[in-house]
Amino acid sequence: MKEILLLSDVHANYPALKAVGESLDLDRFDTIINAGDITVYGTFPNESIHWFKDLGERAINIVGNTDRRILRLLKGKKMKKPRIQEKRVMYDWTCEHLSGASIDFLRSLRKKNKFRVEGLDLGIFHGSAAKPNAQVFPTSPLSRFVQLAGKGSYDIHIMGHSHVPFHKIINGVHFINPGSVGRMFDGDPRASYAILRIKSGQCRIEHFRVAYKVDDVVKGLREHNLPDIYGEMFQVGRKLN
Ligand SMILES: [Fe+2]
Image 1 (cartoon, rainbow, N blue to C red):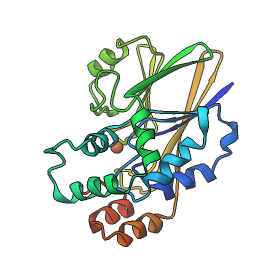
Image 2 (cartoon, protein in one colour):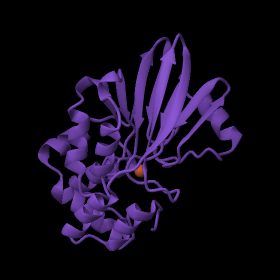
Image 3 (cartoon, rainbow, N blue to C red):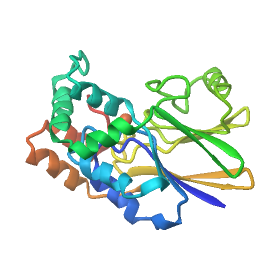
C-alpha cells in the first residue's frame, strides 16, 4: 500500500502547516503533495517553502495562482490585479520578504505535475486539468466533471484552489481536493488536508481537520502592520474580501 499526504493552499500560514506535520508521522508517507498557493496572506512564506524543501524528493510541488502572481510581480510586471488595496499590500509584502532561495524554489515549479502509483496515473493541478485558475467545487455541474474526466488519461485528479475539501468519482475518475491547509473559507478555521491510500489499483481517501494556534499567524500579521482583515479571516475561517 502507498500512502500519499495531500496538502494545498498553505498561503504562508506556517503555524497551520506545522500543526498538520506534527499531527502525523510524516515518515510513513511515500509522497507528499503540495497543490499550490504556498504564498500570500500569512507572513511565513519562507518557513512554509522550507518545510516542503526539507522533504526532498518525496514532496511534489506545483505553483498556484498566488505564487504565479508573486513571480510576475517580482519580474517587475505592472499588474491590475489584485485591485483591492489590502490584497495588494499582502502581495507586495510577500515580494519584499521572500528569500532568494524561496524565489528560486517557486521559479522551479510547474503549473501541473503527474506521477504513477501502483498502476494509477495521478495528475496534480492547482485549479483543474483544463485551467490552472479554474475553481472546481463539489457542486460544480456534472458536465464539468465529465469534461475534466476526459482531459488526459488520469485516474486521479488532485486539485486545490477552491479551498473546498471533496472527493467525487465521475466516469471512474477520482477528483480530490484536500481543502486548504492555511486559509479555509467554511467558517471552521482548522487546517484541512487529506490522506490518499492506494493498494492494488484501489484508492481510499480520508479528509481531516487539525486545530492550530491561529493566534500565531495573527501575531505575524500584527508585527508587520498588515491589514487587520486577514487576521480576522484566519480567526473566523472565512473569506472576507
Ligand atoms: Fe488558494
